[in-house]
Image (cartoon, rainbow, N blue to C red; front, side, top):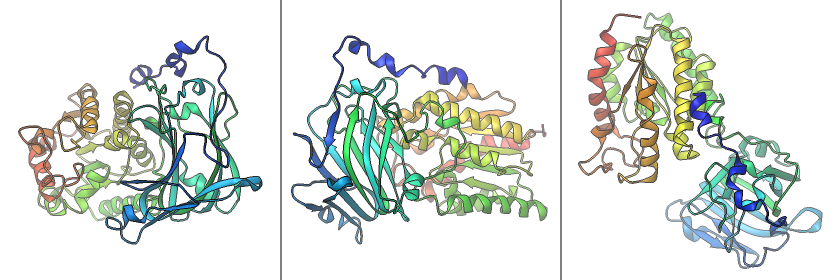
Amino acid sequence: MRAGLAAVSLSIASMLPALAHAAPPVDLVLFDGAPRQGVTISAVAPDTEHVLLGERVDAAAGIRDTFPGSAIELARGEGPGGGKALTLRWNRIWKSGVRFAGPPFDLRPYLAAGTLAFDLKVDALDQGGILFRVGCGDDCERHVSYVLPGRAAQGKGWQRIVLSMSCFARDGDDFRSVTRPFLLEGTGSGQVGVANVAFSRAGTPNTPCPDWRTVAVTPDTLNESWSTDWWLPRHRQKLDEARRMVAEGRSPQLVFIGDSITQGWEKEGAQVWQQNYARHHALALGFGGDRTENVLWRLQHGEVDGIDPKVAVLLIGTNNTGHRRDFPAITAAGIERNLEELKARLPRTRILLLAIFPRDAAADGPLRRLNEQVNARLPALADGRRVFFLDVNKAFLGADGSLPANVMPDWLHPNEAGYAIWARAMQPELDRLLALPRL
């Protein structure tokens, strides 16, 4: 794992060789009561953007058909110290935001020791969350989540947020021509104000962010706006379920561990599960949205304690690649860390590590390619004694490599037919492992 992380842990300074003799950069102010010349401000909806030309813009036209009952509104208003600000209000929507866009900006001068700073006022965030995105080139954005701190800031007035630019920079990112430098994004429902947005060449950050190099191996709960209400209760429910099964003499002999795809065994795949795995007193430990660090937290907080299954099936990683675009080595390191924890906590259990399932409709889809790069690293994690690797992905795909919508309607989550395909493709190896003598 350390070698995998070291391979991608290059200094941000290595992206800046051309700047060694450049003139000291000045601050880049995007908004200080009015937008910088050439900068446009837009209200962001899931599929559209609506430029703010007057005092207010309503995104209703872009969402009413697809998201009835939802709302997104961006308006000018009063900011800190009597200045001007922007207020974003959104309701029952998975994506909204206020975006600053303009001519290409070279953000490289702000990377080495620079900051992104702005004033933020949280009026309502009980049922929502926010995050901050910075552009890093064509089709490239990096984000910092602010769900829990944002909720803690509700009703406390204007606060200055200062983030290190290292929060948004990864090795190899090209910041020389950024047309979409900043987005404040909202999910769920909420209302926030933002003012005085600027990049500075230096500054003292007051807001922490995860280290992208280690986040996948650092245990954490899933702190998304849509997960905070159910994630920990589900964890406690699973602890109770396992204890109850053991007390009733049905200690799980088969355990599935993963994200929403594994959680789907309790929904779309329930009938297939009943037909194939109920006889093994199987336990499904799938949590929608989980990344490797969330599985690690759950394992370290008791989810497999007190049980002794013959086989544990691990399928995790697609939210690392899809949510953060983690580098393949980073995701693989997170998966390896999960395997280490499972081996320590289940010393008599064989682990069947599955390749991350395909996503995107076409074979050359960007997330498909990223998952495949991770999968190429996973066979090296199998030792043929405790850990076994299996790739069933071809069973889901058409002859041309396409992912049929009648198997995974959203090109990510299997439907009932998809779960049946998964079960058939995995069964020979699962039967073999279950039949082996106990370790």
